[in-house]
Structure formats: C-alpha cells, structure tokens
Length: 298
Image (tube, rainbow, N blue to C red; front, side, top):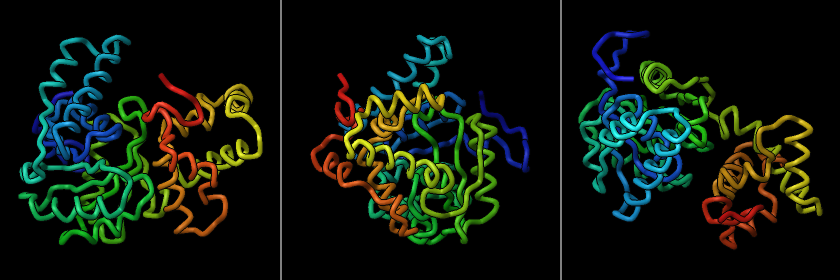
C-alpha cells in the first residue's frame, strides 16, 4: 500500500500519517515498524542503543525474509520496506512524526518517562501518541503529558505482521478525533481489524485470555505436563496453539506484568500470577525469547 493525499473515510488522508514513529524495537516494536513500512509509510524507530538497533534490524529483516519465503511479499517489496525504515538513538528525532507508537517494555515508569519526553519534543500538536501497552492504564500514561487528549492505546498482538486484530483504547481524556485517527491508521493504512475497548486493565482480549492461561500454569503446578495440557487444548478444542506454548511465545515476564496489572485492578484470584510462574521468571526462564520456558528452544 502506498500513501497519497486522497481524503478517505472520516475525513482523514494517508498523507497525514506517512511520517510514522516507533519507540522500541523488541518483538512488538519491530513488528509495528515492519507493517508500517510494508504499508508504504516512512518509519523512524527510536532505540536505546546501537545493540538494540542491531537486534531490531535482525528481527525486521528476518521477518521480511520469512514473508518472502512464504511468497507473501516479493523480494522487491521486502527491499522497499527495509529502505523505508531508519533508526535513531535520540528521541528528539521523533519531533516531525505525525504518529508515534510506543512499544517499550511493559513497565509503567518506563512508559511514563517515554511519553513525558515525547510530549516535549513533538512539533505537531495534532500528532497521535499511541501506546502498545497490553494491560496498563491509558489515562495514567496520558497524564504524563501536557496534552492527554492525543494519547491513545493501540494494542497490537504478537506476531504483529500475522495477527489481524488491534485494540483501540481511548481514555476519559482522549479526544474522539485522536481515537478516530488511530482507528483509521490501523485499518485503512495498516490493513488491520480494529475493535474499541474501554480503558481497563487487560482491555478486552487479555482480560478474557489470561485467566485461562494462568489456569494452565496452575495445572502444571499440580503435576500435569505442559505437553499433555497443550495437546488437550489443540486436539480437543481446536485451538491453534496450547496455552503453555502460547505463554512461551508471549514471554513469561510479560505474562507476569499483565497478570499483576489485572490483579491490581480487579483483585480477583484468577488474575493472580501463580508462584511457579514467578519462580520461572526470577530464574530467567522467560519462554521462547530466552531459549527456555515451559519448553526448550534451540
């Protein structure tokens, strides 16, 4: 998809979004940068160090190479997408962006710091500041800025290039125009499916998903193997992936962060992270990204 200045649904035009920023280039940030570049947007990614940049380049290139191998895109499309992505270690370089998606670790103090800095450096008062948080309060993040009306939750799912859904979350202070702009961006430009969610911990999807995933961990604690649980859910319920393998994909540290946010807000036992999960994270067993979680990965 290429950008142009033609006015589209809601009175928005693609040209209003062609300067696209991403803060962070882990699994989620790399995925968001990739889909934006494939959509024809000029993407600038802010990272914390050259090492983070190198890891981000490898993630994006590897994902695009897999898309070529599966014949989802051509070699020329891969090369064009890579040409649209630039990197910086200076957050001030986001000043000219028309939309910025924050995708740093699921750690509230870090996100608050990022948004406070972005709010100071962004030149365009109409620019949308979006957070990819999967569980944290949008209103608390927005209050770190002087313009909370332009802060919106835009929750992508992992892997971003594959999964179609994005949750759009406005806070009680979000301007409807900012929420509508974010929705237009993810649907009309990035080709995703959007649903609007209230600003509550876990939003819609994770608030339903995580009690199921945490119940699977408690079942492992009781002595049932991960392989048996996953096989039961795949073959018995037609799930594409069992809950323990899905947890490894999400990341066990991310899982604990989301579970703690859910439990803090709702105080319901089924949201509390099980002790086994806490010990695994403390031991560095984070799932696929660390090479070992409920399964071992090479």
